[in-house]
Image (cartoon, rainbow, N blue to C red):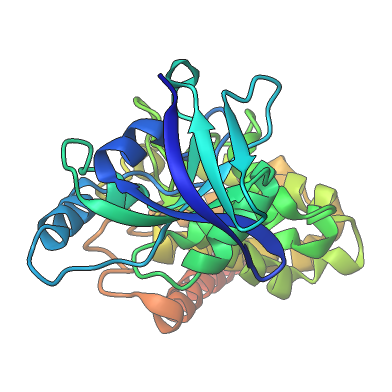
Length: 338
């Protein structure tokens, strides 16, 4: 027997939509959230937060509760499993074949519906018809772009999917993604995008952190005046390979050392900017290893070491100064001993 949802046809700005009401149990059974699968590179939504969803479940069952319409999309596909039967141009019935499974993509409602599958609360809904995944992602970003708790890294990843020329439009994001997508990089699959985590992988930093660090690097080095973003990304990968080799112990213990955490990432990317500004595009992995070996392995990278208590933009600037000072003193010592 077909599921039949009575709807009113209208428009949300420039898009035709269906407006209606249905039980939370039914809407949950017919819908799904396209959560970002970081390993496969599919999806666009944040990972599910059970506590957030349970808070809404408790609230919506209290007297006087209410919510704005849940937002869905009927994606185009070869085997739809649904059809819209219009009556008079303003009213329609959305018919869904139970055998088709979950045909409603949850554009904005995964946490409101998450723990309501066993409840029969009547809820309002709005449903787009035929949005592509890219169009869904754009709407999700507009609705949730300022939402508290929404990962900025997830929004960055969504932006990357919609840029036609990421290297030119957002070179800092391009470099950050190269670091986590290139198998030769020590950051391979180690940045957190804010989607579903992959078991067995160590998330050292977020995509947003690395993107901001890459922006600092680009400002310090001014490398894009000399080479394309692709070459700059390769230089950054070589730099981090050198870091992971020279600072092997600190790199291998991210829980107790700051090499791959916030302030350490910012400071090291500032240093990379300095090194490339000095050597230019001729810099390579051997050059980075030689420069780092002179001083960085003697630096205290532990959580209670030189960078302890430093955070934010001010802390990152202080950390970079500490690194530069350590390098300067090392150079002076080498000259004196020479």
